[in-house]
Image (cartoon, rainbow, N blue to C red; front, side, top):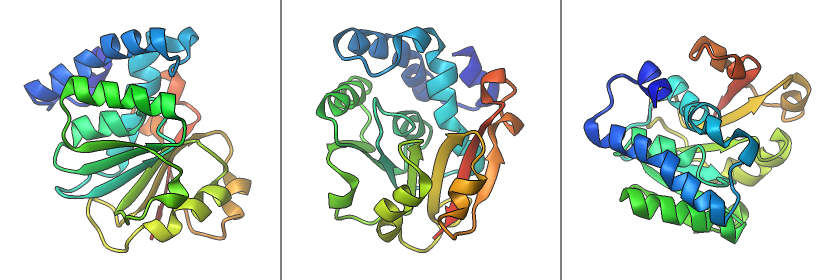
Length: 206
């Protein structure tokens, strides 16, 4: 929790309570359904919660913004972002039922009203969104094919509507294959921990 306060000192008491509750909730669920690697569970706040919140350092979502988390796994980045932006609306989508069961359990325990867990493939989601977020679910050309027609033009945050994707390593070749213009934000510019040295938020506008 100290990590979250270090970079987000303006949290409300409700947000603080929600973030503080995540460790025990995920510890409990992880004993039943392994969604967070056991070898790095002690680093939950660094490697999962704070990593998710790197998106918020690049783009703050407006009230009413519609955000889709594709391949949300155990709820990252959507659950930390939903806590941070209670006036935005999130759909956390994953095709693996046991992962969505965990997301449903965490969301229900926290009482979050602004996030809807959904067990589905992204291609079948009928709605359109202002932003699509994700954490390294597939290569970017494939990801763009999945989501591009689900994003509406406009601006419902500090950046124009588009894709915000958490990924690490050398991305030049992969991004070039999309024939689109991308902005890369080094997470190490926001968070000083060694874990973030090679990690980025990758963004493109619709």
